[in-house]
Length: 512
Image (tube, rainbow, N blue to C red):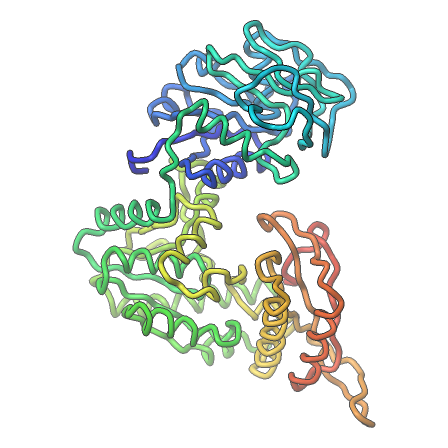
């Protein structure tokens, strides 16, 4: 990362907390990195952080082999903030007392300030926070001032200003802690004196400079899928190297209605990118003839995509680099930024290992919300920037049964109605995914005086933060009614509409 940004390190003690904390730090315009708790302290300090945050985690400090950290971190001259498990670790390592109380606190909790505090300065003396702990700190280490308590935590926040070490037993990073972002900002700006330089503009400038340095005068290929990640990656690289970028868009025939035209319009006409649009629908549908099993569908679609992409790549054998839309969570989840594994291309299921390309990954430092912000700044249309996640095999895994051109056409039309009605109702930003599914069964219905045997359409809409878990969206009944009415009246071959109210778990978001 560019030296022009102050860096805050978030030490990962498990669960999903670390990534959420890192995102909240970046929302305050300060650059953050997630690092493993196994990283030696000298390595952490070599990154010249202005602050270090110890994340929450699912463990107890009392279990054997509880995750820990080298205590020299507290005397390194860098401010430290412990959150939840991180807070208990601070207490334990510096001589306080953490006790198994047998109670714990979970969910919304009342926090009461007990002493003047840097972190809670200017906040109400009583506020709601989000707790999730079994053990409790019952005595702060020597030199620390206890600054807040809760009904189940006599030490809910503490600080040692001289050493620059702070701790909160609750989770300021979650939305349920009403003033959580203000608490994090107090640490970032009042304690760490961090500079708020991490902005859309600086992200674009940094990425463009890095791509130019990596690529030099060489030519670059990019596989476009129509999704937001590949689109923003392509737009960034195009800004960096102009017409030395060639984008390859493989139309599998399994895309959303109007998606191919949207990609063509945006990249060829708006950005003037050299776009190779491969219309391969017949080839994909022929390969999928009579295939029912979902994993076979995925494999066939992935392999066919690779063959098509290889044929195009062979025509551009002077290109040395391949753009890939790897995001920061992909790198963190694969074992940290230093051990990054190449993510399977989101539209492919894995490009072959023997393709002789060096990867260009302009989004590798970014979270999804930052990718969308950069896309907006670069002038990509809203339909692409805010496009919902879409499976690599596309509509192929939303037709439950064999795939035919007729079924693809029916599903694409029904899906477009679902998406349009969600957008018309003003729900597009609050719903993670909303789409249609076509089970290959015939149901009986009545239209006019005639009985019909036609397909059902199932509507699926979920809310989620990260797709790890998801809840079915409580769509207003009038929106569901409009969707059902339009699908039955406007899409030939459909006579019934159902709504899927299964959460994840136990269900998955997709049907296959």
